Amino acid sequence: MATKNKTPLRQCTGCREMKSKKEMIRVLKTPENEIVLDATGRKNGRGAYVCLSQECLEKAVKSRGIERSLKMAVPAEVYEDLKKELANIEKQQ
Image (cartoon, rainbow, N blue to C red; front, side):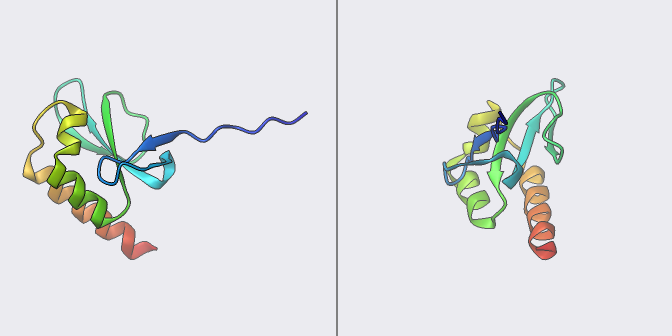
């Protein structure tokens, strides 16, 4: 009897939809209170997920969803890095 593995679902901080963890990018607050992008999704720390679209990122910035999820203020440089990363991902697709 074969069992299917469950795919982990996460909620986007922009559009608030539940999607597969692999379809999203993770913004991570490390124990040292640094904010970094986590491509692997396995680093230690508190994470917030955003869909791989510019629209969702803009919604998350406007509604302060990432800041709320990470429980701290997010510098503008992090948002710029996220925009660049999403632009690179969209070019590859």
